[in-house]
Length: 234
Image (cartoon, rainbow, N blue to C red; front, side):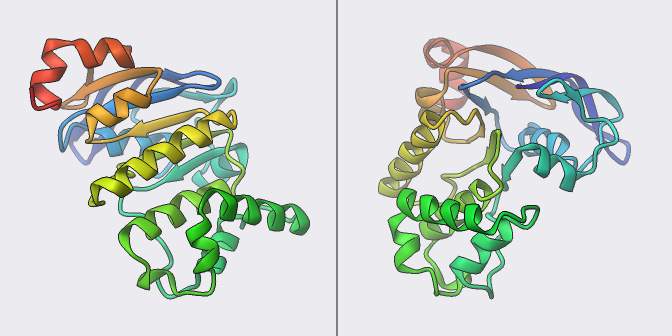
């Protein structure tokens, strides 16, 4: 579904990604773990078209994405839940969801999708007229995910969805990630909570200083001594 081959991305003269290659197949949850500054967010931003690789190839459903602008990538089906949520804080929950469907014109289907988001996140339905900036951290994360779901993604990239949340909300977010995946949507998950991420992932990659240094199934990486020492606090 999503394939990255030999991607190198620079910020000025600083190389942020070095020969990164990874794939996300149909129906998979793929975790990308690593320490702060490893290049995880840059990987997602490169796939989304927010930054441009100096070398390498990104393809989605067989289509080469070179020269395809970020907005068009959303239309193609690449959903992105960014780090820090990036909501429209002075707009209501309902309006944030509506803006998630800005590339679409099918009003009735948009309404149906909004109701599906409310089924996935009943708390958002209760707060649909509330200003997004006044929501709790967990509710804001739910809204960020819901807004991306309004694009009808064919693959969903999530950047640190559990960051800053209370443990009980972390459990909720990871349960929802699994529910979304069970709907048939592949997920590329960037997450510092490596244990949780690898528990839900079919496969995973370890990124260090811009390079993939290890890959395997979620369970293989959980059982790896190197991964356990570096990322699982063991």
